[in-house]
Image 1 (cartoon, rainbow, N blue to C red):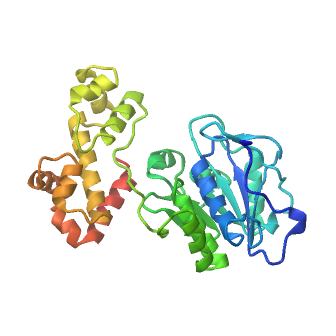
Image 2: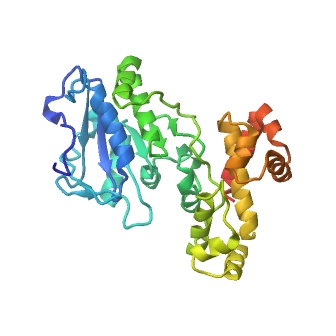
Image 3: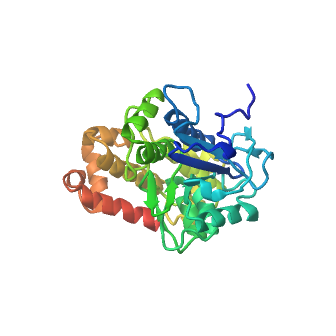
Length: 351
C-alpha cells in the first residue's frame, strides 16, 4: 500500500452545495499521526452512507504552501499534501496538526502566514497537539484559553505568557479558536464538529464504525494531569519518568539511580539542585498526586487507589495524603470541587 494513500479528497473545483462541512488540514514537521487520522477518519465516515468514504456531506483537503512536498510525521511516515492554499475562505475549519517540539523546525513563516490569512477570512482555526503553539506564534491566541497536553504544559509555560494554558480538559473552544491536547482526544473533538454540522445521528454512526462506545465532552479530564515539573536535566527527567512508570510497585532510590546510570548520591544531589527535593519526596509526591487524580476521576475504593499508588494500605495512603493536601481522601470524594481546585493549582504552579 502506498504510504501516502489517504481517503479521497473532493476536488476544490466541484464543491457540492450539499456539503455541510469543509475542513482543510495543514501538517507541521514531525506531526503526530493519531490526532490527524482520528479527525480525518471521523469526517470520512460522516461524509457518506455506510463505509463508502465518498466526500458527499463533508470534505477534507490537505493543503500546503508547497503542495507535492512530503511532510514527515513523528514516527517517520511521510504524507504529501496535494492542494495549494488558494481560496482559504471556502473552508469552515483549518486544522493545524503539530507534534514533536524538540526535533527540528516547527511551523515556518509561510505556514504562519497561512494561519493568519485564514483567520482574517473568518475561518475557524483548530490546533491539534502542539499545533496550538503555531497558532500562538501566529498571534491568533492573544488573551484566549488554550488546551495543552499535560505532557507539554511546562514547555508551554516556558515560551508563552499571554495565553492561559488549560491542561485538565480534552479540548477548549474559544470562539473561532479551538485547541485540543491531541492523542485520542482529537476523536472526541471530531465527533463534536460532525454533530454540530451534520447532526448527532451521523456523529454516532461514525463512532460506532470506529468501535467507540462513548464520546467525551470538551471538559472531560485528560487521563493524567501534570505531576512534577520536569527539569531540563536529562537524568532528572529520566528518573521522574521512571517513577511515573512504576507507581503501584515503587522502586528503590538505588534502582532508579541504576536505571539512569549514576550513583544514589549523585541522584540525590541533582534532585536537590534541580527540583529542590529528594528523590524519595518526589516519588511520594507523584504517587499522591496520582491518588488525587484518581479520587476525582474514578469510582475506585480508596483502598484500591492506595494500592495503585504504591501504599501498603488505605491508612498509610490517607495519612500522607492528609499531610500533603491538608484534607483526607474521603473529604475530596465528598467535596470534589475542592479537589479540582487543588489539582488546578498544582497544574498552574507546575511543580
